[in-house]
Length: 160
Image (tube, rainbow, N blue to C red; front, side, top):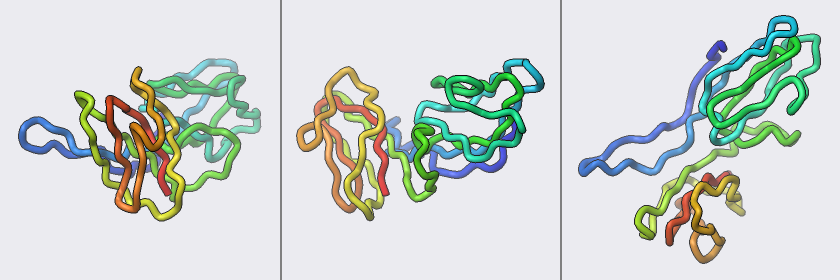
């Protein structure tokens, strides 16, 4: 795996051991299979991975010659490509760095506000991480200053 560039806020620690709300880090990287060999590239893929540029003549087809799990990306059968993690799944949609992913977690059922500049609505819940249901308007919501969660909701949100 070759890291191309890294950007994004990973978070800061405050006194008392409390971690600040964070934006999921965005990481640009390449992953390359040689011939028919499977290659696994370690990367935090918990907030999704998108293929941004195919480098090989061999097609890179999600689910067939490349895919990802929580802890990395695999490529196979000669697929060589550049990827970005932290911006949601590669669903064939337009790649847009304006879409940020914010992780927000309610601890001990308490309400938590996660700062993020929301310029376009709606905010989209892209991955629920809690067993507790995240219900818009009840256990999560947003305003111009960010996302809030309550009642044990823990999730990743796409904000624009």
